[in-house]
Image (cartoon, rainbow, N blue to C red; front, side):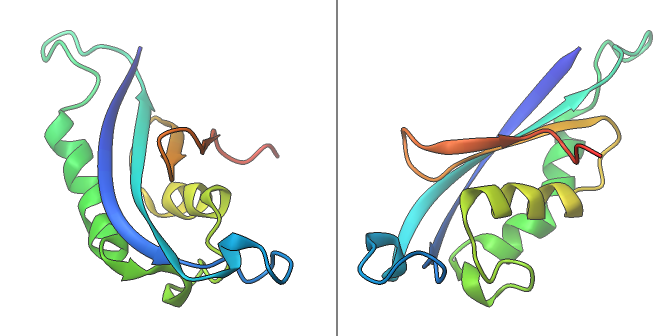
Length: 118
């Protein structure tokens, strides 16, 4: 069974490694949407995979680090692409059964990370 919870935060960033003149090299902001997915068995007694409140509590410290921040100043996010942000979140979430992290930086653009491949 897969369950998910969405989180939102506002942040500014720029992408230092894109070519001069690229619009993403300029400072700009996004209303990020992150979806955290957990895989597990439905508990016989509880009837759920995980309490959504536990998922929210696990993400809360990351939300505090990301919301209304300049992402380039956060250790590990010096080049804060959506892909790097998804990996950064994955590496810091302490959740049993973590299955994937989706990051949307706009309504139509985002990425999905399902953990290391090796």
